[in-house]
Length: 431
Ligand SMILES: *[C@@H]1O[C@H](CO)[C@@H](O)[C@H](O)[C@H]1NC(C)=O
Ligand SMILES: *[C@@H]1O[C@H](CO)[C@@H](O)[C@H](O)[C@H]1NC(C)=O
Ligand SMILES: *[C@@H]1O[C@H](CO)[C@@H](O)[C@H](O)[C@H]1NC(C)=O
Ligand SMILES: *[C@@H]1O[C@H](CO)[C@@H](O)[C@H](O)[C@H]1NC(C)=O
Ligand SMILES: *[C@@H]1O[C@H](CO)[C@@H](O)[C@H](O)[C@H]1NC(C)=O
Image 1: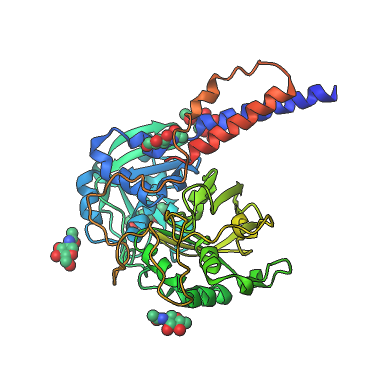
Image 2 (image 1 turned 90 degrees about the vertical axis):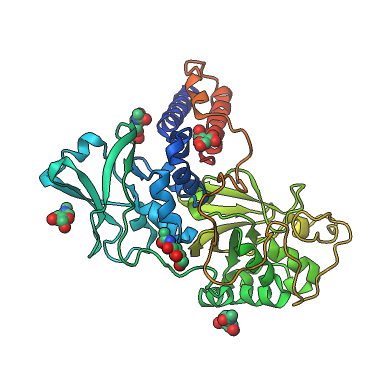
């Protein structure tokens, strides 16, 4: 009896997984194949705003045509573009019908920008107003904001979940753009202020700070252990590491890609770090559960605690523990000499001297530029830069085909549940 009950629970679990996959949307897929929105779509991917949109249940995306988008992005950093896209994402479902039947002709709603913590007061709220003549317009609720963004047409509606509408102009307000940028941020100062003094000290004394700075120009995710992490009782004595191993350890705390928390949450499997050799060595594995994201090194697990800086294409997170790569701390016979920077052939990589300018990792091609962050040219390349997901995930609707009557065998149900869950994850990590 008990066993048969368990079957039922498993079948229900499987069914609810199937249901949640069926309702999951994919904003970039919706806009794919619509040539008038390619620029918008490309920036959704570059800024990873697509991950934030796809994780919401009930959402309205206000889309700009290539023309409107190219004048918006002309002089903006990626960080500013990200904020513009977030302000165009409303956290409620508005289709054409609802826009034309607003109670008392106007409604205040929340945008994704309001959830960033960067929005002062109600600047991230959007006032939707039915203007005279049947025109519907959008403006930030910030003082001084203008109703310059008007509804032009519907693009796609998935009732009560996702509405994709075209609008004439971006929603802006004075002060939206020109957010302090990573390029001007003093990384060491930022780390010290946030209680990661020990990490900052190592990064500077080893010279790895230079590698980080070079990578920041292209894409960088940094996991900075806080000072408590260096006090942990079971932490191996890091002062015993050779300077080459220390460099590797610090490179292991960074990814050559832009991965804000929303994107880490939908990441599945191993991701390369700046220390990765390309053969799966020195990769990190991401584990997420609800809102919690952890990194698994094979030796230890560390929670991603907070985000100190999110300025596309650079993001700095704090973590609760020092990330100990199995290749250095696996306990097995002493590992091979530390590899050089990412992608190099491990053989004969000379150990960089402490505090000597370290060689640039492969992932960071260009020279460090001074000035504003994220210099980029407007017609963006198709966005799938370094991807976190393994290739060719099966489509979510595979799951629909599953025969739920299949049987009660616990094993089968469990295998199926696992498969469905991995489909869901794999599917979600694309956007
Ligand atoms: C919308 O989402 C709900 C649950 O969130 C789901 O039941 C429904 O099937 C979804 N509708 C569409 C059209 O995807
Ligand atoms: C961008 O900046 C340049 C130089 O500051 C200026 O000449 C140009 O008009 C600006 N373009 C837009 C669209 O604001
Ligand atoms: C939206 O803005 C208009 C014009 O400023 C204002 O009259 C209206 O009260 C606002 N609506 C809401 C719901 O705040
Ligand atoms: C960055 O901050 C650190 C500590 O706050 C300071 O020692 C260093 O001079 C600063 N570097 C720059 C370039 O401002
Ligand atoms: C989402 O769309 C992209 C293309 O825009 C596609 O590559 C990816 O497989 C889609 N993900 C899902 C879950 O279908």
